[in-house]
Image 1 (tube, helix red, strand yellow):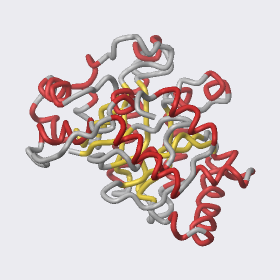
Image 2 (image 1 turned 180 degrees about the vertical axis):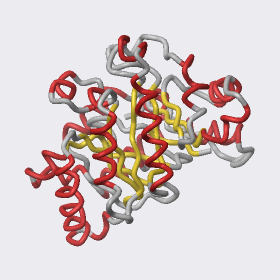
Image 3 (image 1 turned 90 degrees about the horizontal axis):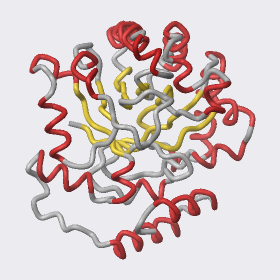
Image 4 (image 1 turned 90 degrees about the vertical axis):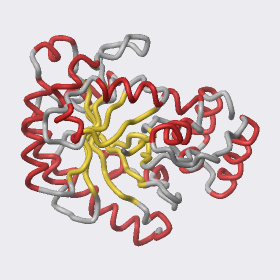
Length: 294
């Protein structure tokens, strides 16, 4: 099973991602392709310097197929200029962020009902074979779309992409619709049906520990469990950077001698990382505001 550190806006800098021992995958914050194509300074947020044991993803937002080709060309230019950033495993299309600004321009979860548009964007990204491609979804833009089962129309089309191209390796699903607040309970009633699709599913939402994962896996029909590729954690990881190691210790029966770090040790590691690759000011500000250890 894979263990993904969720992409967190104005948080997921290299110095932050590196302290997460046991995370198999990590992501940059969501980056607008429009900004990446038009603004040189946006490329500073692609800080994919080496992190031992982690596969690093760039998470992008777009609704325009033409932007994908431009982005991929500029990405190769960036890697040539900065070879130390050449540690990118994959690119994930964000169809999940509930920001009204994103939704109003037809991006994020506004794309879930536009399955043809999503498939076209993914096919553009899959025209290269250097990077794996994934997508992050919610259950829908709103409750109406959940009832209309828009996500299932999209999953059916994504199955075809997965058959066509082995580099499509990641379907992360946040188990809420985009209008639900952070305090709302996650809706896992659709998990078993979602896992019946032949897709590499990453489960995201409210996972805190190994017991939560075991409960979710236990709710899935045995024949569907093979399609669960991993889990993604965001909120709990902000509080506890050792959560992945604690989970793996219980589930995988490995790292039995893993020593839990105290908050002072975690802060020290983060500060050391910041000296190597200094995050932008807004990242440091947000991390200090949202974590108990910084």
